[in-house]
Amino acid sequence: MSGQVKDQTEARRATKAERREARVAAARAAKRRKIVYGMLGTFFGTILLIGFAFVVFKDGGDNSAAAQPNASASPGTTPAADPNAPADPNAPAPDAKFPPLPPGADPALGTKPVVTKGEGTPKELKVTTLIQGKGATVKSGDNITVNYVGVKYPTGEQFDASWDSKQAYPVTIGVGQVIPGWDQGLVGVKVGSRVQLDIPSNLAYGDGPDSRLPGPLRFVVDVLGVNPA
Image (cartoon, rainbow, N blue to C red; front, side, top):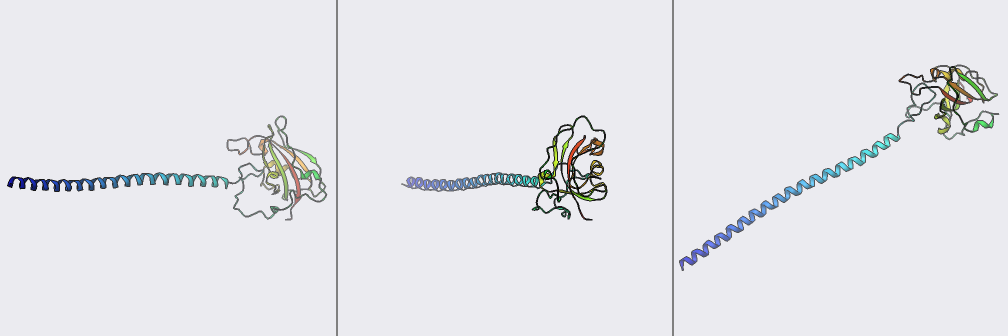
């Protein structure tokens, strides 16, 4: 009888020990699951942040690219103007009639000219009058308003045109604001004229390694007015 009681007591002790071990094992398993879930949460959170950052910076890059100034070469000797710079007081308003033709001008000045490639290689500046105006004669130092198309002389490939922005171009002639071919070729031209300027490279942007637009150029320029001083 005493042996049977002893066996039952030991059985109860074993059952308690097993339950205690089971609780310890369950606690350890829960702790491991918590650690694993925490690691997985950190991993997926990092992936989401990387994806979000990629989308944001990708869109930001596109917008900044869109905000960049026009990279095409202009007839001036300086890079394209800063879009945040103050507006030129001589520039026509964006909603002004385009192009702003002078009184009595040939209606052909209201249409963008077709500019073709040249023949050979120009060695000196050549000015050809395509439409003869009847207005004031441009003098060195005058601020004038023009429309123009510029192409590469050997190919006829257009690289710039005020027509495309629908805004005429105000510029002072004879003071180095523009390439020498303009400074020399537009002096003496009458308002209302359309002239073709065939410009050798040495009177344009040159042929050096730093040239923004090497080689000879051809411009067709409409002189629309002389602006008040």
